[in-house]
Image 1 (cartoon, helix red, strand yellow):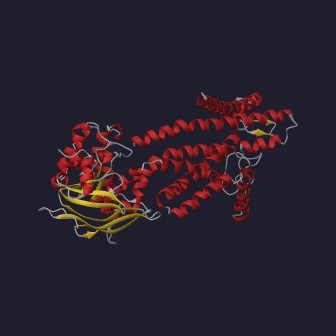
Image 2: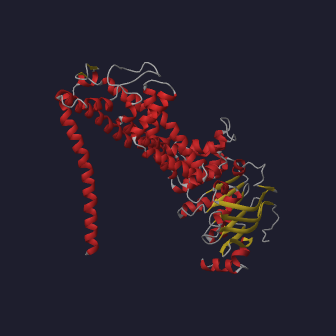
Image 3: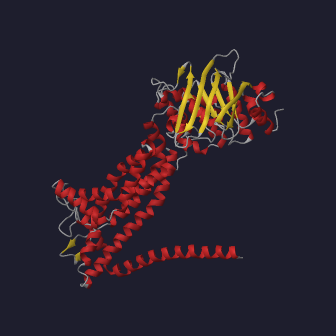
Length: 283
Length: 266
């Protein structure tokens, strides 16, 4: 009797936690959509911002966000693949533990600190100006732990006999990496990348010091002095004008677009991961 | 020293082979002495934890990939110490192939599974790929079952077929020695029979060392038997000799106990 009560209580607590999590997500989605709905239109999505943000759309903010998120992913993927393979395949025990600790420590660094690091490195040290590349690279560093952890988890799930069987055929380490580890680990890297892109696209602090401006930019025209517009930074600036009701609606509209992008990327993670796993097994 | 002797020359000589875990000092194998005759099947029997699998991995230096293990003693292949500086461990593992208990298939087609490793190490090229593929699959008794679907994923094969695919893949590297770690323990009776037929068919051209828990299987397959037992000092080879002698008239108490526990050999 007592055990069945404990079972029932545990089931209730778990179910309640799940409902609360989903409810919170739906509530955020609902608030953002309802408050921003009146701003959303085809023109809002396809036109450039005019004036001080009170007119036009957010097409270049969407493009800028996509560019820096894609840059972050492009830079982080090879780095994460290298770190992951090294941790699983080559590292001795002590350096492996040290690097794993560093990777987890990076994950714990506040995003504003990444912004400051990016500012110090790109502007003070390299003497650059605001650039999509600087923003993308600092975001790459920020999302690196997400990619490494997802990739390494997947690599560690490979049965030991599978790796030993590959070595048992006389393959060199590089061959085992290419033919066994990468195909098996790819779905983990895809998952990590999509989660990382989701996080990179939504960050404000790292990009406000490194690449984002509020107005006056379109698509990047170079590397060193080539700022971009970005959705989170746009929201941040509009929020400072929150006494103006028109601006508030446009802010919520921008937030709705950003949330929709985040949800889309997250939703892609599951089927894309399955597709990569399936294709890897067919390759 | 316990020895296996008949007219066949020894291909592998193992002297004072010990394996221990560095961190704990636990001994997995202690002073193993064993000679493995060429083109014969040597069965390794013994209870769980006696170090049978470790012995196989020490022979082809897969233990090198386990930094926690420390290996001492000698394994001579054709008189050359496999751990000598001039021996390339990757080449050694090609010459001493291994098949594991659980069938291992890699990503990709049946064709790719058989030939990719041999291609990487330069034994297979476009000209001889089909020939090596067919010969390896025939030797593994799998050709007739897969000849029409070589492009299909290896994952579509049954477990028994996957194990024969693993054997074919190892054979594509043309090894001198085939180490088999309980190759039928994951298989049903019918698949076991086919794999056993495959092993017996390979005896003419390969030197085979097969670990098995099944004494009846050891009797069906092996020319020679080596019995490993777990002792206070770690896994030790307590008795070896001709199959019938060891299984029907064991000299060592541990071997008698092992045979007796298994219900005896009939």
